[in-house]
Amino acid sequence: MSKQPKYRQVADALRREIDNGTYPPGSRLPSESELSARFDASRNTVRSGLSLLVTQGLVTSSQGLGYEVAKHEVFELNASRFENLSFPQTGDAYSTDVANAGRRPHQTFRVEMQPAPDSVAERLTIPAGSTTALRFCHRFVDDVPWSTQATHYPEWLISRAPRLAEPGDIDEGTTRYLAGLGIEQVGYFDEIATRMPTPDEARLLEIGAGVPVLLWTRTGYSEDQPIRCTTTTFRGDLNRMNYEIGNLSARSENEPQ
Image (cartoon, rainbow, N blue to C red; front, side, top):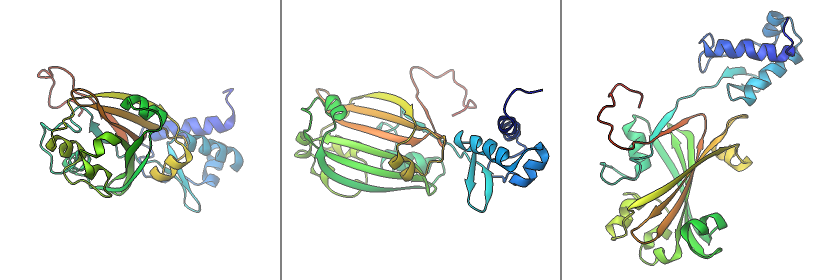
């Protein structure tokens, strides 16, 4: 006889059925009363088991609609090619990548001048509290919140590239815009981390309980100094990143992309 609490037995049984496809993504789970009868357990016990699956990001709940298996329409981002001007683009890197995947991009913008946070000032090698232009994007894939992106540009760069401080999108993308002014990004340093979302992040990205965020911080460099610091915050359940490093001629086209 299992020594696990009954609510965990309920959660484990349902998790196995989700994993083996008995309940595919988007399908409705049986009602609490049906599960109570199946597992010979009280509704409170069943509810605790379902709540555990919710906190693990496997199930979503809606008032009056019961419990549904979470959908995971993952978008894969090739971080090596992102912003690489040697690859064809029809707009900025985000719009190009999403459209090329057969998905629909949409984003909103906020631009403001503000003091650099300490972590950003350190990466941009400017004094703490120095003025930066913050370009903040709220991005969607097929109308589903996908990421937020906060990019800080140092004040010295704004005088040479004034469109960075103007509201709204830069159609060709900021990397291509700067390159057109002779300010070319020749390298970048990436940092990747995960954590649970802040309340504001959970609201903007419509993240359910138990789902972490993926933080991708990229510092871009010209030949002699850093020119921007970008932190992209992704929904952890809907995104995957990859990099291409070295000679991949032996890699099959049929391997997972």
